[in-house]
Length: 247
Ligand SMILES: Nc1ncnc2c1ncn2[C@@H]1O[C@H](COP(=O)(O)OP(=O)(O)OP(=O)(O)O)[C@@H](O)[C@H]1O
Figure 1 (spheres, rainbow, N blue to C red):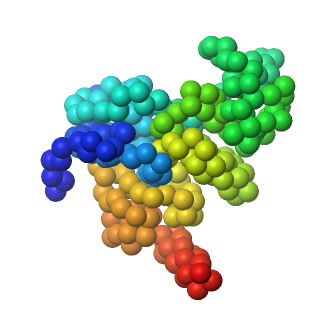
Figure 2: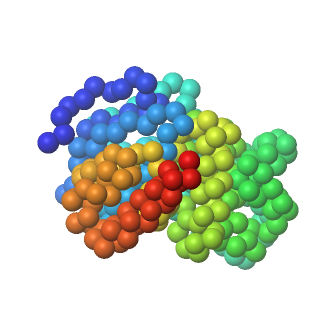
């Protein structure tokens, strides 16, 4: 049972007893979480477990049936969606896209693109970008607000291993440069184990949470992710052991 907890005043985002129903269906049930400055929290869970719905509730795109989402005053949110479809016949440069719906000073646009690892793409056509380049442009767009909280909904979907690894390197650089908290949905368990400070495993309810290693060895997590878990965890332990031996 999850006990009622008061919001943590050090957190920059609090969720308390959040419930979302669509029609008669309970999609999210009694979700509570805290996000702290510079913390990386990763949300994992099987398909249809409510990850995107939770993210959309946090950014205000879905209204909860009950419960609270509280964001500390003056905290700005940057959001990188799972996917964005643009009409490929629409002639649009990266610069034009990134200035929708509002124009930004050129130096801000260039800086955001550089921070997202897309500095050379400002005059490229959106329709000619690779999947990885496209996602970096979406990241740059989210950075224009200089976010305190960066929220990413499976931003590496469709990227290969290298593209995924590169994208998460940019996220790590961004977290350090902007000092922002990161909340991301990820299916890539290797990335989760390596990069997250805190993992939330969602399956309508939060079925387990904690440091990556704690979550990976939890029976609830293993019931959801099975063998993949054992392999990921073994690799994670191996790397950490090696790092400890070197250090
Ligand atoms: N607007 C909506 N109206 C009705 N049902 C919805 C709506 N949005 C999502 N759902 C349902 O809510 C459930 C959770 O969906 P959600 O997209 O949040 O899951 P997810 O964990 O992000 O899944 P995936 O890993 O496949 O992206 C699904 O059963 C989905 O069909």
